[in-house]
Amino acid sequence: MKVTVFGSGYVGLVTGTCLAEVGNEVLCIDTNEQKIAMLKQGEVPIHEPGLDVLVQKNIAGKRLGFSTDVAQGIAHGLFQFIAVGTPPDEDGSADLQYVLAVARSIGKNMKDYRIVVNKSTVPVGTADKVRDTIHETLGERGIKLEFDVVSNPEFLKEGAAIDDFMKPDRIIVGADNPRTIELLRILYAPFNRSHDRLVAMDIRSAELTKYAANAMLATKISFMNEMANLAEKLGADIEQVRLGIGADPRIGYHFIYPGCGYGGSCFPKDVKALERIAWEVDYSADLLKAVERVNNQQKQTLFNKIQSHFKDQMAGRTIALWGLAFKPNTDDMREAPSRTLMEALWKTGVRVRAYDPIASKEAQRIYGSREDLTLCETPEVALEGADALAVATEWNIFRSLDFERVRTTLKAPVVFDGRNLYDPGLMASQGIVYYSIGRPTVA
Ligand code: UGA
Image (cartoon, rainbow, N blue to C red; front, side, top):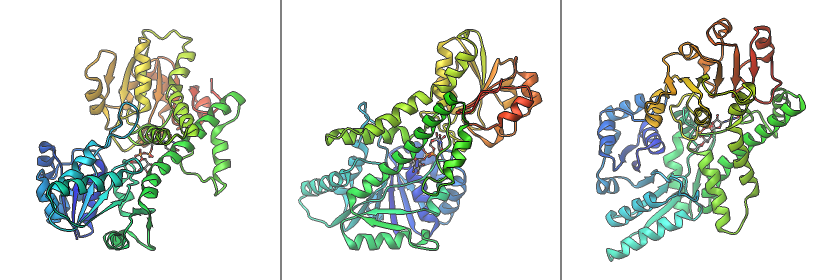
């Protein structure tokens, strides 16, 4: 089938590439000429494991193309996927200008039936706005053409996006026309594996499903972080509690890892946006507000522990920081807990020697060159001359700690672990002062 994808960012690129991989003819459209020029050469501007190989393979197979020509895109695909950004406005609501600009272009250029599929995360009711916009622009042209608008939210995780797309838990399709649902069933058939993954529903429910999924996951994390904080005060061990509650299949083991807060481009933005959506219909989403508040506090927790360890004598110290990305396998630092920590440390006159397997370049882009940030080539170099080590991201490379090196390279063997990577008993036996999340401190 022929597919056009508007927006060659994270979601659009993964969607277009995976749809090409299963045999569709996909044309990806983006207004950024430099990005399209790169992609035409098979150069992928984002870090996502496995994506570059798939892009190159499908370009070579002539199933995947890139263009800045919007009219060509609209002429190409029966399916017109909208996967452009919806950045938060100042009040937290999603900015729809890019989504509606694509809708206008479709209205201006379409010549026959099109299925407009919305992949961007958008407030409930956006499909109606997209439909109205296309109607309006068709009206300006003085013509009537048939089209359908579908909500098909994505559930990709950064770092695992290809797998998530190729082997989805579910494919949500919100549509008000059974014929459209059948066409999407055909498009998505290759991703079903053993059973049909497509869940068809009305459009507004599909739009809300996306927010509800992310808000539920964020709630699980904030809940666990709250339990962790309580465990610290009560002398309990949150990791034992996690295993204890996860064993109940009604709770499950997923997404109950306590830590130094959730980050990324999705949870913080979507929780805020859903709060805003609720406010607009006169509903006070108290639980979501608490989820956000707990997370903002949790992102301060490493700093608070460092500050209380050094008894407020912070100025002039150096902290080694392992992990800059908001989670492993990505170079994304949006809303990353590492940023909250570094910015708080800098305010108190502390220098940071940071190491991340791939996000250093991103840190350089965000913070530029500053005297109180040294981006190091290896985790070991980051330890040199530092007063203590803090861990903000659970990269695998950090999991087996070289105790001897920590003892001999740091000025004093003190570790602040925001991801509970190490065994407190082992740290104690190695003579390392160890602070973690929701577990007794080892001194
Ligand atoms: C999230 C969702 O997991 C995807 O399903 C969704 O499609 C995506 O948002 C989106 O809306 O686009 P992502 O933001 O890539 O994906 O990352 P996650 O793996 O969900 O992690 C988010 C944050 O939660 C990270 O900072 C991670 O460290 C934190 N986290 C996760 C915890 O603190 N504890 C956990 O148990 C799990």
